[in-house]
Image (cartoon, rainbow, N blue to C red; front, side):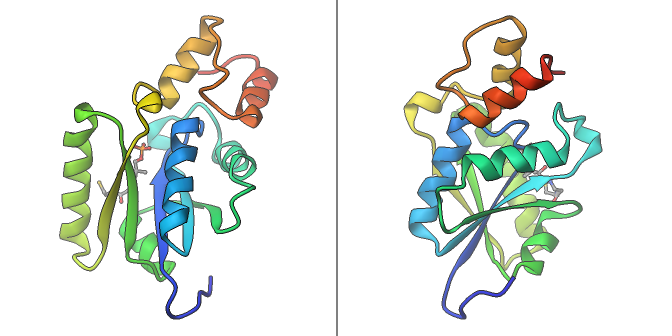
Length: 166
Ligand code: PNS
């Protein structure tokens, strides 16, 4: 992927299983600061995702289609290697609550150890999304709860199509 020499490309990685309105808000806010944002969907059988990587990627693409400088890719292996392959130096992560902090802090330090030239930037959630997670959405759906307002329409349609989520 080529980018103008002076442009800054940031990578927003995650499982996105599925993408939520909280994720979309973070991607959108990052896109206002950086020239290009790559939403990087982890291909990882170990995490046993509910949706295939193709489905997660498609949902993210549909959800972010209106943002001209946001693109969606899938990746496997080490995040820092993927970021280098994109000629980027920036990781974006969203922070919802103190409970996220320990995991995020550990991951940021681990990535820093692996690649000191790559920086992690945290974007603090909008309060309305602070309780929102992909797993909560799947749980609520399983028990026939209302998930509108939590995920974009394309995700609701996909979940309804599947009928059942892991
Ligand atoms: O949405 P998630 O599951 O919290 O995202 C986690 C993710 C994808 C950012 C993280 O698991 C990751 O970067 N995986 C790739 C493997 C890697 O680089 N591990 C070393 C850093 S801990």
